[in-house]
Each structure stands twice: as C-alpha cells, then as structure tokens.
Image (tube, rainbow, N blue to C red):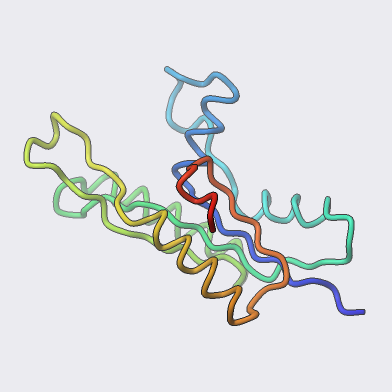
Length: 146
C-alpha cells in the first residue's frame, strides 16, 4: 500500500501568536515563538500512526507593504525565502499584503484574506485529490467548517 500524502496548511501568524501565548512569551522579543514550518510538519508526519509522507507545507501569512514598512517587509521576505529554501520544494509561502487603516501607524496593519485563502486551498486541493491527509494548523475558529 502506498503511503498517504500529507499536506500541512499553516496560518503562520496565528500559530506564532498561539506559541507565544502557550509558552507565556508576552513581552519577550518577537524572535521568541518563531516556528519552523518544515520541521513542525515533519514532526507531525513522523507521529502519524499510518504510513505517510510529507508532500507539502503551505504557509499562509501577511506581508508588510514595502513602501510603508520597508524593514519589516525585508525581514518577512528573508524569513519566507529561508523557509522555502530549507523546504527543498516542499514549502510554499502564500502571502497577502497587510491592510493599513487610515490612521496607521496608530492603529496597526492587519492581515486580511489569509484564512479565506487557506480554507479555499484546503477544500479545493482535497476535491482535486492533491493530498490524502490535510493538516490545518490554526487557532482561528472560522476555519472549523473547512
């Protein structure tokens, strides 16, 4: 029997915030709570009771606007590029530019459309039989129906 194809769908900011909260990292530098999507996905697959292999890691995340937050944009790009390189073809980053309110920076920029993109891909790829096991990583309760 062939091993099951596993694709992990990861809401990056949501999982990052969850890690910071779970390990009580509030007030600590932002580097605390960072996750490695590939290593986390590999760990999940090795713990699966049936024969399976990691077929892909899809990382969904917001991306700062380069004209408004050039340093944050650069850091986001470097981190995303490193994740893709380490993934050797398994990791794909799906990014959406952050939305900036009219009173930014007093009101922070927000991710918009990340959860929708993730849910649409999760369902569409299942219908197309692109994976046998889909792992959706998020604490966003809006994704429960997916």
